[in-house]
Amino acid sequence: MKKLLLLGGSLFFLLACSEEKATVFFKKYDETSALEMQQDHEKDRMKFKLIQSKYLDMNTIFKPFQDDLASFSDEDYQSLKPIILESDIPSLQKNIKKGKLSYEKLTLFYLYRIRKFESDSTRSLNAIITLNPNVVKEAREKDENLKEFSSDYSVYGMPILLKDNINTKEMPTTAGAIALAENKNTEDAFIVKKLKENGALILGKVNLSEWAYFFCSGCPLGYSAIGGQTLNPYGRKIFETGGSSAGSGVAVATNYAVAAVGTET
Image 1 (cartoon, rainbow, N blue to C red):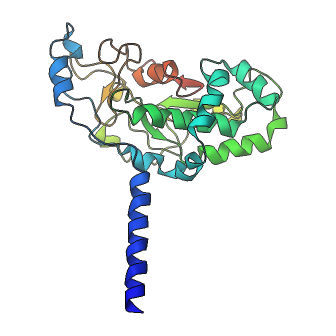
Image 2 (cartoon, rainbow, N blue to C red):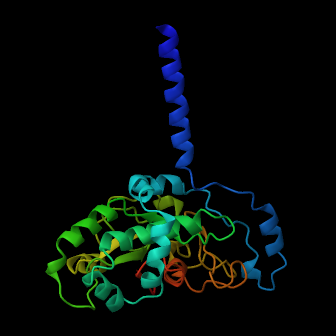
Image 3 (cartoon, one colour):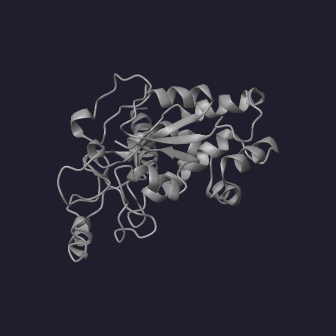
């Protein structure tokens, strides 16, 4: 009997370990050689001293979506690409009305795409700081109440990312600074309230130049202690990301959301 219990316990432990390993998509990598190469860049601001975030654990950020993404396959992702990538809001809304798409599938598509690229050390852009853990549930609710809106131009059900100096209830607002890493006691900013009133889904928060400005003359654009160095999808580690709203621009260019909000500070 004891042997059976020990065997059963061992099997349970092994299965639990296997399941835990299967959920690890994001791993830190040795960026020493990449940083050495950057020192030859013609622009001083591109001579990075750090690329990856030392603070974020993206596996933890994606944990709330583990079950939903487990049932969303690469086949689902590939089949949806033609009707989602580079599509504007009217096109997406028309496809939802036709039944070719749903708000839930649209949201899962973006979550899958973010994980797909950001977990690949050769393609990651460090655009995302955090994600709304309730966004899939909220997307399902939008599908159930689809008749509430009629305009093809409505933001209803559209997953939107926010620059992380815009206050939200669901997620900390950090401005990219370690000092505000646990800044959770915030109310929705005016623009967030208006987006929600019109049915938009707040997908998450994006990286930025820390404090939405620059600490020094010649500091890299799009770097923050929370999010690491935002990279340009059109020339990763080659071109700058521009302004403090780097994560907002990169996220839209990479099709991580329908839209993103930046700020002019």
